[in-house]
Length: 413
Image 1 (cartoon, rainbow, N blue to C red):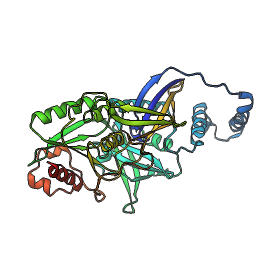
Image 2: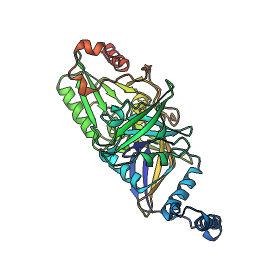
Image 3: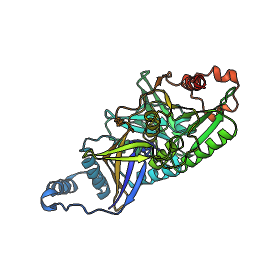
Image 4: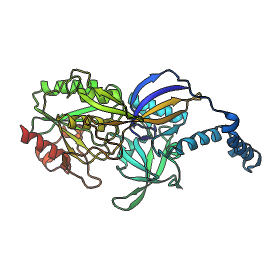
């Protein structure tokens, strides 16, 4: 059995399902190590009851088509992981989910483009991906998936909900969505698509010398793309940056450290990792950043998770940036990914991460310095659309979080 470590966003990417992870977040890849020797179980005593149940079902259950080795094996593994009580975090991944997880980290995948988390036994949307079917159809952070193609899924574990949403590009799936903030229930039909993440986009905010940088996810090369963006921004004579991490579900740990390192001196603490014995490991900025001195404000919201929270927490704790927006999602476990022989895998929580000052983020989130909440459904400004905006368009925007960040930067200059 091969073991990998992920600082996971605790998210599932629907369609090309899977977090992260984090993340997530998609999932955040730390390292790959050789298999370790596990203690041998006395199968004669430990698995007698399981074998009895399996043989009884196989012999007596009336629907023989439902009794397959794969179904029962996966069900038994899933049941063992669920018995840990770490709902929505530690989990069993089918081969399809493992493949989708790894595709996400390359920045290209197929699906509806949304991230979900299991909370209070409900499957909850964390955030849609930019330019995805989920975003186009108006799925929002906090939305609850109630049914898929007309079948109730409120009693199903997260993995089963995810499996039902999986499907090839061009196929359709209908989700019944409940929005707690409004009490609305609606059906949303989405066509799965091939999605390519555009890691970093930026634009000069009209009438200002401020750049708005949007990071949509922490997949491969995002820190390199950010370095280039910051170089271009300063070459253009711009004097401040709004770093937008809203609805960013996370991604690779190496990229989170790299992004933080664009604004923090080498050797500065980015995060702490604490294991079950409360041992601490420090992760520090390692690159020569392109934005060490430029004034900075960071935008966050409920859809900011995992790697986004690492970066926001590091910049806040080190006094490098003000945070504006809403409290973040509150993810933060380090998961070991154990690859199984058929391509499936186990994700097991072995560590949690903390901010440089030691704040626990799991289930708590990062709290902004300036709290600004937006009404449900408010359209967030994106760099790709800002290039066509006038000064009047910007000032009349409903994106009060971005306007507040701009105000904070201008007031400090």
